[in-house]
Amino acid sequence: MSYKKPEVRGLGHHLKAARHMTIGTMRRDGWVISTRCPRCHLDCWVDLNTLVRLNSSELRLWNRTARCRRYSCSGRMIFLATPPGEVLGAFWALQDDPDRPRAPGGTDQAA
Ligand SMILES: [Zn+2]
Image 1: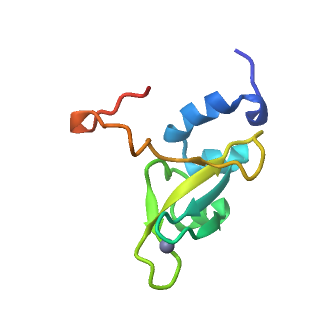
Image 2: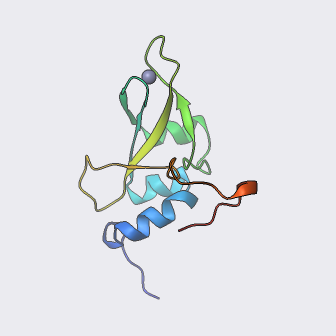
């Protein structure tokens, strides 16, 4: 197996790998992360250097949310990402499809 640079691995590879990826790996491979509040639609950039410093490089963003940064909004922000090699500004949500029914017991099978 030969090494492939992150930016040539393809979107399908990245979207499959994203659920297991740590922020340390995302920072190394050049992912761009932002957040969006579904309630007030506030978008924020996420600085992976800061996130690693405040948490740990082992943190995973898949299915995580964060408190909305807008004053008096009680929404929970979801994480969005642009994988390396993709057009900046095209974001994919780092979460399971909320409309897809989950398997009972939390053992969600990948599609
Ligand atoms: Zn909000």
